[in-house]
Image (cartoon, rainbow, N blue to C red; front, side, top):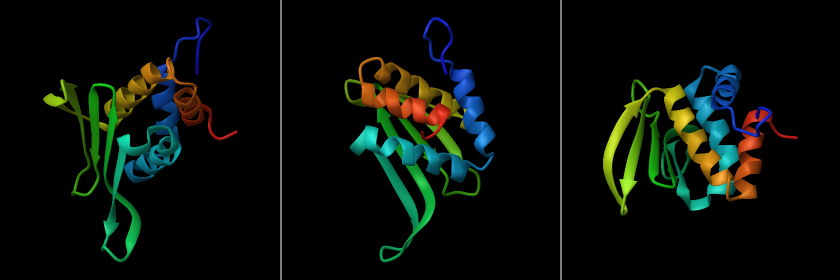
Length: 132
């Protein structure tokens, strides 16, 4: 996860997640499971199914970290990934990206938060090296 200077290696993290599966549904589910305790209400997950019976299928994930709002929309024919840039509580720009770019942005935001929070650091480490 780190090199000799203790710097976080984003390429290693993205490669690790991509190696787990090429399935976006599985990848997003894994991220949600590992980050739910750290992010709390900054992580919103919309699942498929009806009001009475929710499925395990994830339709949409929204993650708010720092000044970014990361959205993965898996409910359509093709998944879409976007990163909203926030200033003063208002989204000033939204960029579309692919799954690896979205993961990279998410992990970079987590890395910044991990510099201040040991809980965020532990979650980030669990993504990279797995549950211990």
